[in-house]
Image (cartoon, rainbow, N blue to C red; front, side, top):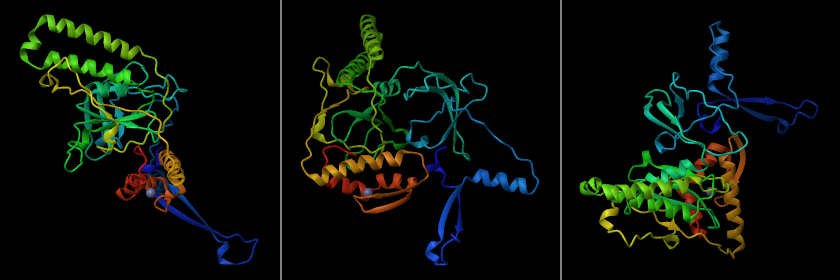
Length: 348
Ligand SMILES: [Zn+2]
């Protein structure tokens, strides 16, 4: 269970007094227990003698699915009960790699926070496949670097942003995907080559009808795809925190991609992606270094699923008792502005 989304939980406060000591009221300890709403309902029904429907038990081997899109990422994903994929098992419990499940029919429930899927296909277990597929077909991407700028940690995919307002053009369909494997510059070159070939085949009706061109396009794409999917990639252990915010990349870190052999007019359908420079940065200032590690630590704390916490954001000097509040704080404009003022070379 992810208790961060349990906003409906009812809170019970119980007071216990330590009788062994004096009657000093400061000895009263307060214990706050969160009880899920469903559990309260079960208890109430039992009290008035109504039948109670129990669900579960759930196996830890059963796979969980979640949506990549911003609009549905917090919703529960349910696969059609008649589908062979309705119950999926984690084949590799010990490794923490995401797999890709593709659905032809996606239904959003109006009343319940559920996404129902029909006609699903579970893609092969290739490490990093969700991110690679997203980068091959996304209209625009923005790569993310770790705090020290040494490694690519994730990618924001979507239609891009409005440069005037700095807001996403179509936020609902944006996907912020963390890399669970290391994505190299070579991978990006391959992805761009595939995109270039797709452009060559599709930029006009004549090109799509040119048999020689199509044959060469198909051959190149097959070779590049094969190399891309067969490459061995080391794991990426970064704890990624998707913010879904565009234009967070330092312009100096961008490496624009140019294809000299192709006219820019032919690259409009799938524009080539920019790469980013990964490098070693030196943080001389002691405070900035301390804050950088504190921010990494905060982000890790915010992504763990424990509901209660007692954490201070030392940058803003604010205390948090609930992980959900800390999670929200890390994306707040006030916090992000202070992070920006730290002038760490890369976004956190
Ligand atoms: Zn803060």
